[in-house]
Length: 132
Image 1 (spheres, one colour):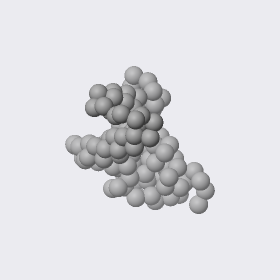
Image 2 (cartoon, rainbow, N blue to C red):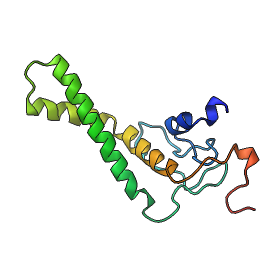
Image 3 (cartoon, one colour):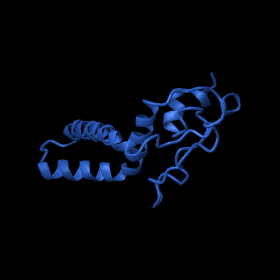
């Protein structure tokens, strides 16, 4: 298996979970339309929203990522600051979370769909969705 078809590469690069070749998001990460998704994979035709409201579960993934960011920020702050105040903690965590908002949004959606759609192989070796 090449590095381009690995699970970690597919998640990090936000590739289609079925073929790991097509992009899930058309725009740049830090742009005004960072949340816009393709409706289907341009390569294999996998639908990115299998049912209405599919990505509501991604909110729970996003929450878990935000809790991890909070805990990591708290640990890092405790190493560098002697007297940690609530305002300092809230300010640092808010800045980090807002700075990483596009990353968290995309990562939570990618992780959510990867839980439900399995890898079938390179695009050239699998039929497009809807074909037999």
